[in-house]
Image 1: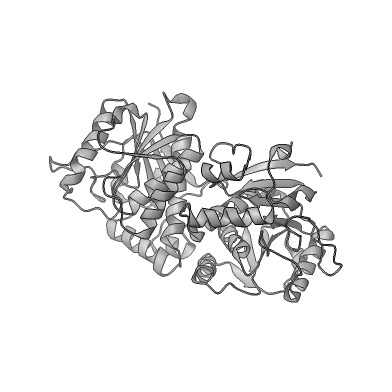
Image 2: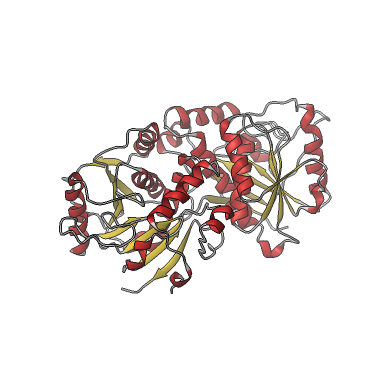
Length: 244
Length: 244
């Protein structure tokens, strides 16, 4: 199934502008949209990977320092409510009050924070919430090992890798990194938020979802975001899926 | 179907304490929880009243001055995304930045604000988001007419009345008002948030939903909130439904 041909892919600058307009002109708060984005990520994971098909219910949620990491923290909390056992890698926690509260909320749900010494391949699912649409190479060296661990666990077939908005390390417009330094992630599942970014046209995994069902008609019109209709009251939309 | 017998009904003080603890101890913001609460309300409405069964897609969302009204504003926005045509009555808008932003968001979705002169019975659905768990009688006189208009449109069978958390004007613990002054609402649908309040045991409508899927285990344990499990990744749970 593919709905992919009809949709618009945003450039990095368009993605930045859409984000800014959602806050400045539409009156949304980061709290609100991050909650909906993270919920859509958790929902897409739940639908893509039924618990009964997994070796265990552990999910490793790898969170970066910015809003993509915040989406991951929110997704972890909802995944806990959906019956998963999420654990979080968060090497460089965001400093703002919002990020501190998101961590506190996870702790209230008994979600453990673990470090890079955890055995990545023991998690059937790994969520990549490191970098989003504002990422610009080169990769900061402190994230090289984390990306490498995610890549190894996914390339060796032990873990399914799920990227939030952008596969981390990818150029937002041109796709997989070619610098020979940045580990090249190959997620099986991509959850684009608001609208896919240009690099998503090179995504070659099994499931491509759209989440972040909150874009008002003013923005849809201005940026010609011709996304397909979400079904029913769903918070995510399957753009395409492939058999293994 | 009924799951009602197993659940705990909160007293007014317990509801106030749970709310306070969600913010003070669990680190949630009002923005976050109102977004999830409003989304669960919109989802329950979507599931109870399929668009194809309605005379038209208009919904009148009646919002009070506090957080119950805020839930209504959020629900209106999501209902718009789900294909409804919500219009809002908001006689006394909340003054805080949050409420002003919620109004702005609705305007971005071309949702109209109307006054009490609108013909209530032309709306197949009316949402009662006037007062929530912190309501204490007597009813302020400025809301008497609004409740009366909602009551008439619903009692004469033209509109289905849906109450958010508490039927407005009801005593949170003892149920329907008996003062002879307060219009007695008889909603067909009740969406309890977090956990039902004591008055919900007297709800005699068709659909009783639970929404607000965000309560951490610490609170569930402390207040013995033995709510049934939500299905799948759903944001609302049908506690019971009756045939007409």
